[in-house]
Structures are given as structure tokens and as C-alpha cells.
Length: 173
Length: 282
Image (cartoon, rainbow over the protein chains, first blue to last red):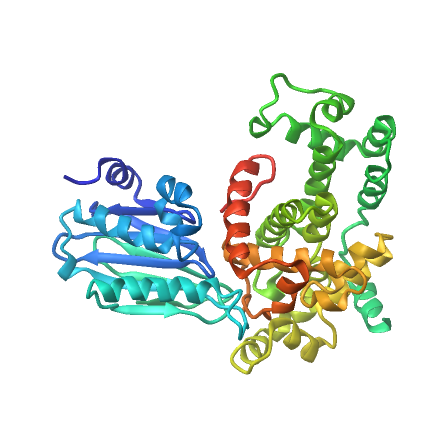
């Protein structure tokens, strides 16, 4: 069964904004899932072209162990709990793990050789580790650098569009 | 110093000096705060007072009945909350515009500044420092961008080319192109506005707090808060993450890198809580 609450929201609104620390999934053909201002946060877009279902996550921190209570309320805040919740929600929309196209964006980094401040890098590494453990390949990624990004997943086509703050051109992942 | 003043003098649309903020801060630091004096200072500006009462009556503050007089609001909310509301109303007026020279759209500098202010309050609270001081310094830390914006407008390509990939941070590129950084211009603006030296130094050196002698701690809160705001997605503009990591700040404030993640979480919750009172659109 589809996840009723999330799917219903996307069904009513064509454009659904995924806030920081949140995730959304949909199989509604008119749904456009957008998340803004991915700085060090990691955006994960997944899409199954057969089920025509997908989802988008905007995770803030790599590891939920820092505050498990918060992770239980809002799994999307953390990469580990967020990725798991995103995949689970998409499976409920009949998405198949083997068909999912996975795109990553965000994970901007500070100029920090010590990496003490580089939450963006840790977010990205955490996500890569989880995907590798499950044998899931990354189809496309725009991560790192010094920029803030916005991505949008089109549920009808599976297209992921990316815009970089301070620049006008768009990119298709 | 002259070059900083030259830039400041050339700007046609510099916001009016927020004289009220240093005056109120001074009052708040007195042992026995005189409520009448606080109310008198604020009500001298009727426009500000009206906006302030509107914020006090917003649903987000959850007052049981609406307040109509500033004295009532002060009595109910306390000086510190009123002070921060004043700072927010004034700050929004000064920082709300687009800063195209930095690739910042309308409202984005304000949201970055407000998020940084909330983060600084969270950090100061955790480290047992003056929360209002940290809040104010962080709220105004990027005021220099308002001054330099016009001068950077033609420099989009060189800024993009020189920052990041070639190893330069954003402010280092600013220095190469303009001869000054927005942080020092901001500090100078606050000095000309008669803000106390600690706030001037904290804004002046918010990219390199070790230089803010003897106010490194306050500058350190602003530096960390700025990074926290970045990590909460409130850092728009060209190459906005090209900021140097300063591990010595963690040492100075005696905190671990893991603590930064806690600050991010706590600030994110505080921003959600403040929503409606401090308009930020995450």
C-alpha cells in the first residue's frame, strides 16, 4: 500500500516543497518535488521508471546517533535514518530497489583541511557508505564545492533538475 | 581605515544608524534595568513601536491576551526578549534587500543573518556567555555586504573564477578585487554608528576570530554561528561556502567538532520555534 499521508499531499499539490530535514515520496504523475538551499545538507532523489514513483530527501546531518529521539520524530534530519525512510516510503509505492535511479546533490564544503567543520563531506560519505552496503549504484551526483543548490524531481519523467545559487543556468542530472 | 571610510562614504543607500541597539544593550547591562527608560527609548520611534507590538501579538509568541502598550509587553516578555525583537525589526529593515553583487536575492541576506543570530544565541547560552550580545553581533555580522554590494556588481565573473578552485576563500577574493573585505567594512560601519568595541571587533573579525583581540570569544561565537547558518541552508550567493575552517576557534571555545552538530540541531529547533516572530522561510 502507498504511504497514505505523503502520497495524498503530493496528489493534491502539483508542487511539493521538501523542507530541510524532511522527505517526501509520490507516484502522482503531476507531482514535482523540490528542495531548496542544499548547502552542506545532502539531497537524495530516487526514482523507479517502471512504477513511476520516487522521492526526495533533504538531510541535514550524517548520523542520527547524536539525537536518536529527534531522529525518531524526523528521520529526514539525518542521512542514515533519512535514506532508510526514503527507500521504505518508495517501496510502499511499489518501487523496486533494483530499478531505482539514485541522484545526489549538495554536500557543499568549507575550506577546511581538518574537516572539523565539513558536515557536507560527512553527509556525502555517510550516504555513499549506506548505498554501497546495499549494492546500490549512484546514477548521478553534483556534490561538494562551495555552492548552495536546489533540486527538483519530476515524478512523471524521473528527471532531476539542479540549480546552483548565484548562477542562472540549470543542469539535468 | 581610510579605504573603509571611502567605501562607506560612497554608498548612497546606507541604512540609518540603529542608534537604539547600542543604547538598549547598555541599559540591559545595568544591574537594575529601568523599565521606564527602555520603554521611552523604544517609543521614541512610533513606527518601530507599532511593528514591535505587532510581533508581540503574533500567534507564535502565544500571549494569552493581546498587548496594546509597550510597557505591558516589556512586563510580560521581559527586557531580553523585547530587546531581541527590537533588533529583529531593525535588522530586517537593514538587511532585507537583494545584494546582487553577492548573488543574494531579496530576503536571503536577512534570513542568513537572522539564522546566524539565533545560532549565536544557542552557542552563547551553551557556553554561558551574554546571549543578547552574541545575538546582536551575529545579526549584524554581514552589514558590510550592504556597503560593498554595489562595488561587486560588475565583478561576478572574476569572483566566480578566483574563489574556491584557486584556493582563495570568498573574503580573500573580495580583498583582491576591492582591496577590502565585507567583514572589516561591517566592523567600521558599527564603529561609526557608536556600537561598543566588542561588537565592532566581533563583526570585523568574524572570518578569523583569533584576530579580534581581546574579543576573540564573541567573534568566535559569530564565526561558528555563521557556519551553523550555512549548514542549515541559509547561505545563498556566489561560492558562499568558500569560508575557511578555523580549528583554533574550537580550541579557544573548548568545544569538540561533534558539538557543532549539536549546535546545528538546536538552532534548527530554535528557528522553527521562532517562526512567526522572526520571519525566516526555511
